[in-house]
Image (cartoon, rainbow, N blue to C red):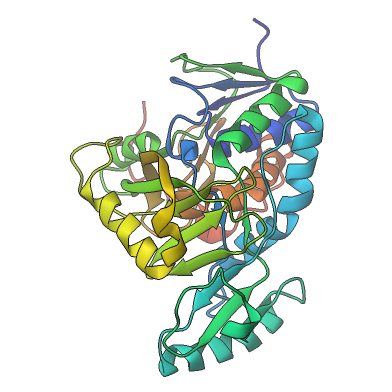
Length: 353
């Protein structure tokens, strides 16, 4: 096998996005995945690409905004190369406003969105009569609608990205545990990679947090996402609707669904009663990588030459993957560093052989 210019360990959305960006620039790319692509937290089916609130602006929110704005053209390019569809659409998201205090906050955020989203998207307050039947109850009778939120089918997105990488002559080796000791290597290995970093640092850099989701036979294509009571309801292109997700710091099994998902499903039906007649198609559980700061961890390893890290996608991995791929390709191929300071690994205070 020819030596790769860049080897990416991990076939989740970060690893494949980086492989795609590097391959587009002519690099020889190899992705090494010890199971199958998308077998970790990227293998779910929620697919909610949603922004954080537009107030209290920071580097993470700016990075996320730029990635969400580039997502449509980026996924179109991936789909065009691969000949596959990932089910992407910018459909917006509605949120019931539960109290007068929340209504006042929502009104302030209208102004923050105008200022921080640069006219590229809106954060609006609407009445129920503006929204139609696909709408939960709201104690105030009012709702937030943001026009930035999008959705995709995660499994298809992973298949589409992998096919695009191969079309660009990249290699993807599944069920493979190779760990190259020469050349440029990017570690995009999810919660297992965070555990390895914790051992290197002798302290916690991040943890794995379990999430569970349920897929329903509910055709609401063309409707916006719904967010309320801490959960997402996402109507997909293929005529299904996904509900997620739990956030579990303590758990007994990484991939087994349980009563917590049953409770989540029941909450979703209370929020949007139309879901009550929908058949459950699939249940999913997986471990998402969460850094201590909840921001992604990107950049050069502070103590290892030619080793880079791309981790910590947590709940926004698919939303920020397009820009993660581009900034990591800039860094590893051209030495151009566009990574926000808050995303970097801290200095490693230990000796190395």
